[in-house]
Image (cartoon, rainbow, N blue to C red; front, side, top):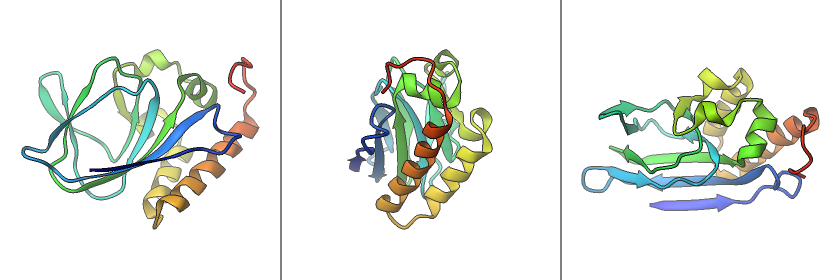
Length: 160
């Protein structure tokens, strides 16, 4: 497995924990455990891999663009083929500021991005998939979230 993290710009550091990239090959049965990070992640599968998550006693297929809420326990994943993913790890309080969605709605849950966030986030996810490298992916994310930041009025000043 290959895992890389990219730090956000100084302007976004109070809001974005990191951007990350992961490559993985299945080992044995392809099952792995994902440890909770304490943040909310937007996860974009970059290739055509069909990943599954163990949920309520069965394997459930995951969508290509996932919004993963804060978890209190590990997630069991099955990655049957070579998999590449890019993620945006958003600090919990910043997620609420950016998207105006209570975190309790995502607690210990993962949902399709399109079902929870607006079409602009789906468009960003599609653009991320089209990029040739992580530098371009991070640049897209930076531009998107800096624009969002300029349009929100924080309710609290503990973020900046």
